[in-house]
Image 1 (spheres, rainbow, N blue to C red):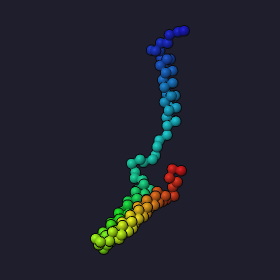
Image 2 (cartoon, one colour):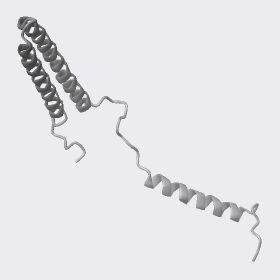
Image 3 (cartoon, rainbow, N blue to C red):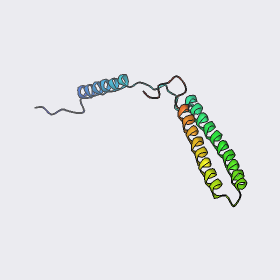
Image 4 (cartoon, rainbow, N blue to C red):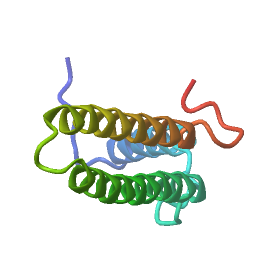
Length: 119
C-alpha cells in the first residue's frame, strides 16, 4: 500500500471535503432552541401565589383558633378538668381541620389552568 503524503494538495482537498461534509451534517441535525429560559413562567408564579395564599389563610385560621382555645381554657377555670380535656380535644380537631383545608387548598393550586401537569 502506498504511503499517503499529507502534504499533497489532493490529500488536503479530500480531508477538507470530509471535514466540510461532517460539519454540514452536524449543523443540519442541530436545531436551535427558541425557549427563553430566563423568562418568568407565569403558571409557576400563579401556582406559587396560590400556595402562598393558602398558607396565609391557614396561618390566620390557626391564630384565630389559638386565641379561641386560650379564651376557652380560661373560661374552664381551674377546678374543671373535664372542661379542659374537652377543650383540648376540640382544639386539636379544629387544628387538624385547618391543616386538612390548607392541604386541600394547596393541592387545588396544582390543578389550576389548562395544562396536563406533565401527563
